[in-house]
Figure (cartoon, each protein chain N blue to C red):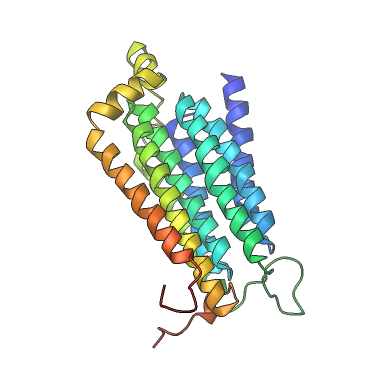
Length: 100
Length: 183
C-alpha cells in the first residue's frame, strides 16, 4: 500500500540530492541542474499532498513552479554564458572578484 | 494494489538513482541526459498520483524545453569536464570543505526523512483520499482549467509577465557586446 509517506520520503531524498549537488560540484551548469532537482522534489511533494487532500491546488501550484523554473533556468544559463565569455571557465571558484 | 506498489518502487528508484548519478558525473552532458531520465521517472510518478496533466507538463516543458536549453548551452560552451586531481579515480573525489558539504547533505536527507516519519509515524501513514470527490476533482484537466482561470487568474497573468521579463533579461545578459559601446 503506497501512502503519502512514500512519496514524501522520495521527495526528501531528491531534495537532499539536489542540495548535495549544489554544495559539491565545481561546474556552474551542474549546480543549476542540482537546483532543478530540488525544484522537482518540491513539485513531487506538492502533487503528493494535493492527491492526499483530494484537491487540485497542488497541481496548479506545480504548474506555476514549472513556469518559474523555466524562467530561472533561462536567466541562469544566460548568466553562465556571460560569465563564460568573461573568464573562459565554468568553475565557480574562478569568479572571486566580489570576494572579500 | 501490488501493481501500483511495483510501479512506484521502480520509478522512485529510477528517479533517485538517476539524480544521484547526475551529481556524480564529470561530464555535464551526461548529467543532463541522466536528469532527463530522472524527470521521465518523475512524470511516471505523477501519473501514479492521478496527475496526468502535470506529468505531460513535466515531459513537454521540463525535459522538452528546459533540459534541451541546458543541452544547447553545454554544447555551445563546449563545457569542459571538471578538473580532478591526478590521483583521483573517475568519480569526483571529495576532500576538505567538500567532505563537510557531503556530510551536511547526508544530514539534511536524514533530517527530512525523520521529519516525515515523525509527522505521521505513530498514527500510521495516512492513505490517500478516496471517493467521488477525489476522482472528479483531481484527475480532470477541465477541473484544473476551471480553478486555474478563476481562483488563480491573477497568478496566471503575473506569470506571463514573469516570462516576458525573463526572456528580455536572458537576451540582454547573453548578448554579445558590440565593440563600439557598452551594449
